[in-house]
Length: 208
Ligand SMILES: *[C@@H]1O[C@H](CO)[C@@H](O)[C@H](O)[C@H]1NC(C)=O
Ligand SMILES: *[C@@H]1O[C@H](CO)[C@@H](O)[C@H](O)[C@H]1NC(C)=O
Image (cartoon, rainbow, N blue to C red; front, side, top):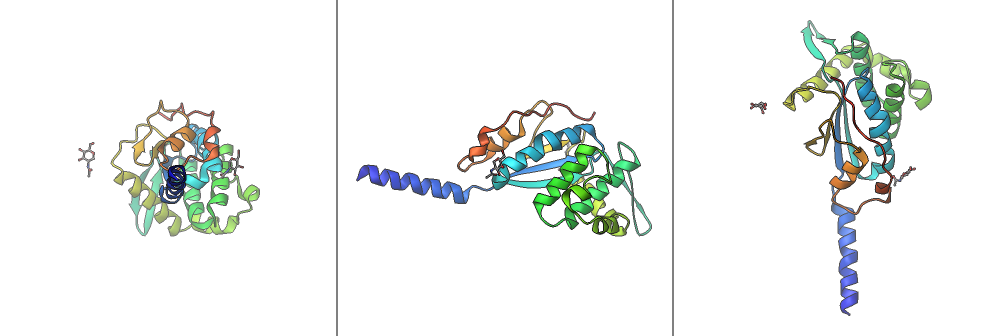
């Protein structure tokens, strides 16, 4: 009887852990033409998402060391890696709004960052409509979406000394921390998914 009660309690605990644990949030502040952002996306973020999406909530932002200035009716931007980066940041920000489904959005981000192509890569591979994103990119919509990303990043009140800037839940990962998958699995309060055993990649380099 005692064993059965203990078993029931254990099963209930498992069920509660499975139901109650909130997902781990990864907030990433990236730049479209930053090689270290690209490495982070392709070697850390995208693999972690593919393996652990059931316990992840993503918050992906493209802005970084950019600057925004108002102009009549809109905004102009200056970016660490030049105008192509601003265009890429805006394109990826438009994509976040206009690509239906996080799986396709993440595949798109991974493809664009892997090619470091800023604007052109990814549409074919992921089967995304270029036109929806192009309409946004060349409009006030794109400017105001990117402006909002900049404001969101400013509200963090963190000095952006390096990019990518990564938070797991509210904790800022500093540049020497490695292995995003492990960080996520450690941060998760529920039953660890089987895929938590899979990691071997590391986060080491940064854009100074
Ligand atoms: C576990 O990882 C594999 C890739 O190694 C992936 O195909 C699978 O969907 C993952 N499982 C879950 C539940 O996310
Ligand atoms: C922003 O950070 C600075 C330095 O850490 C601090 O002095 C200031 O109070 C913060 N401002 C807000 C609004 O949190």
